[in-house]
Length: 106
Image 1 (cartoon, rainbow, N blue to C red):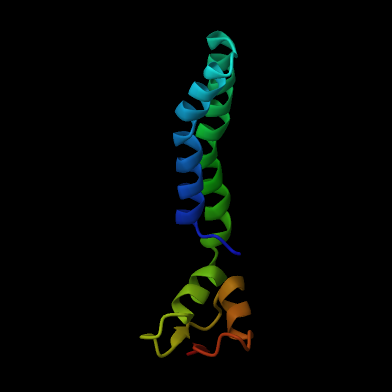
Image 2: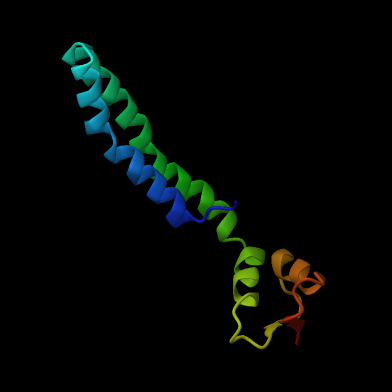
């Protein structure tokens, strides 16, 4: 499975939402409230930091020239993508990639 950013954010939202029920369960099972509070605070701090970290790392890979061309290549309403002469590395690689037949040179 290759999850997209929406799926990853959905997982993180779910993790943030289960803190209350898990805390209640731990307290009901006899764990002191101050220990539960410390534990949930640590977990929420870690999980709360994940969205910007995931977004940053995902953005590094999703916003390359080649990734953008692949996204447009996959659109059924696009007949061809015309690259200018002397295009940069990402576009030049896409021009020579046989899996991207819609990318053509001018």
